[in-house]
Image (cartoon, rainbow, N blue to C red; front, side, top):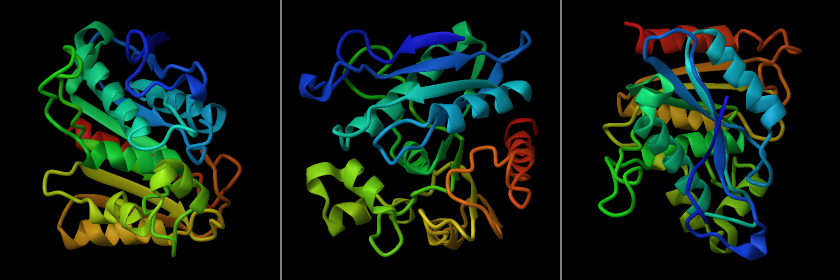
Length: 265
C-alpha cells in the first residue's frame, strides 16, 4: 500500500477553521508486472464522513483480488462543500494517471466506483472532467478523464423529491438551492463523451430512493450512452459488498464481469 497526499502542503481551499485534515489516497498496486487498470474508490458517508471500513477497503480488496489496482480516496467532507470534494476527486484521478508508470497502472484504463454520497462524487468525477488544467503543477495539467463509473446506491440526484437531503445539504453548503441542486444532479449533467456506467441499487433502500438510479439510467439510455443497471428487490442502504444480503450479494461478481468487458476486450 502506498499512502499519497493529493497536494504537497495545503490543498486548494484549505480552511484551518475546518481542521487540519489534508486529502490523500491509499494506492493498492495490482499483482503482477503488467500495467493494470485502476479503480478509484469513493466511500460514502453523506459528505459528513468517509465510510472506509464498509465501502473503501473491502472494495479495494475486491478489485485487487481480480488483478486490478485500487485507490481509496480520503476526500474532504463537511464543513467543506462544493467544489472541494470534486477537486479532491479530480486530483486523485489526475495523480493516478500521472504516476501510472510508477504504480504499475495503465493510464488509459482508469475507472471510479462510489457508494451513496461517494456515488454522487463518482458521478461528478465521471461528468466534470477535463484533459488537464492550463495552470498549476504537472499533475494539474494531467487529464482527469475516466472510462468507467460505478455509482452504487448513489445519491446521483440532488432533486429534493428523491434525494438524501443530508447529502445535498453537505455538498452544496451555503448554496443549497433548487437551482444548484439541479446543476449537480447527474441526470442533468450528461455529455456525449461520458464514460460507461454500471449502476446498482435496491428497491427497498429507505435512505436513498431507488428513483435516483432509475432516473440516471433513463437519462443515459435516452442519450444512447453505455449503461448497465441492476435493481435488487430487497436490501437496506449502505450494503457495501452486500455479503449479508442474499438478494443483492451478486453485485460484486456482476461488476467484475462488467469491468472485464470494458477493460479486457
